[in-house]
Image 1: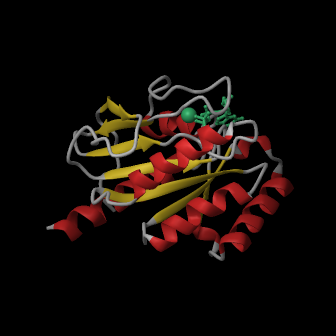
Image 2: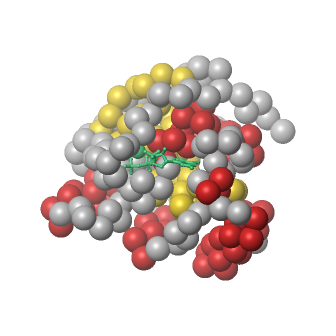
Length: 203
Ligand SMILES: Nc1nc2c(ncn2[C@@H]2O[C@H](COP(=O)(O)OP(=O)(O)OP(=O)(O)O)[C@@H](O)[C@H]2O)c(=O)[nH]1
Ligand SMILES: [Mg+2]
């Protein structure tokens, strides 16, 4: 197993409109999911920095793609959340254009971590993203978030339901909590493996 330690983290910039360039030519792994599902919290827990990515009080506020440079080697990117029921149509359309432009024609994209709130499970709003990822053949990791909010039986149910919905074996979905830190070591290993596979492929 490779070295999956985060030694250095810095905010590298943001993209607010389709077609803008990323802050550098390094591999990227993006974190995506519904608004309020815990993307920013998970990024902070993953890199061990409490206040790197802004955790929202109000869902659906983040409209930009934020880039965090890890170990001077790859970008972890925080995508704006989707599926916020009260978002105006114009905001949804803006999200769609921004994400579509980010996913397509992005030769640096090594993969995506898709987050699903453990209490909510896979929702209709996730399907559009999953369809794009499948079509573009983007390697995908799945994580359940906020697992600390469920008891043992609720947790088992959430894990089984997501695996069934995705048609994946149970070891393909990582149960995580940004609060307790559960699942972070495993997810970090998978993240670094994704970046490694991409680097060797590119040579
Ligand atoms: N109990 C618990 N709460 C969490 C966890 N992760 C996030 N939260 C809470 O969920 C809310 C949303 O968290 P964020 O990390 O801002 O979620 P986000 O997906 O980045 O939200 P947007 O950027 O608005 O789409 C905050 O109140 C967090 O404190 C977790 O693992 N456990
Ligand atoms: Mg966020």
